[in-house]
Length: 198
Image (cartoon, rainbow, N blue to C red; front, top):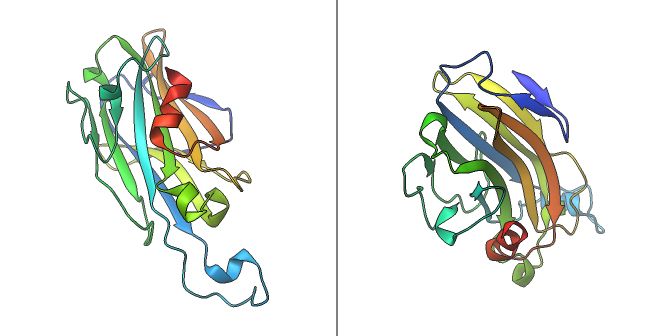
């Protein structure tokens, strides 16, 4: 397993030509109310309920051409079936991945050159929530034998950020690579985030 830092790029299929089905796991934990400051700062009370949603943008020539190329809890698989979403996790509670997206690399149509994995907070503005209220966020990729290939811990200060561009799988010289992005934005909805790629 390779542990990545922000901006690092790594080969997925070079030297591993048999690799096809990979699962992109995204995880996060809400901080407890006691960890947010205030008079009872040291009291670790109930966790904040934050609904984070993972999605993937399927880009053609680095552009998102259609809303149908956004795979999320509202559209659980791509039209060609090469990308599938595990479904919505409403709280982020518990161990392990909170949401997963399965990609069959060899079945992704040639016109798609980049898959961008993002996470946004549902209703962030209304609930006055941001990624400063989230801890232990990460993106990881593992193969069909459940062997973890790469992990990128999202450890930057994302205070006041309401969406994260976590990482991307992209084609390069006939191979698939992964780029650890880790960029926060103030986009309030998945639609606003998608406009960055249109």
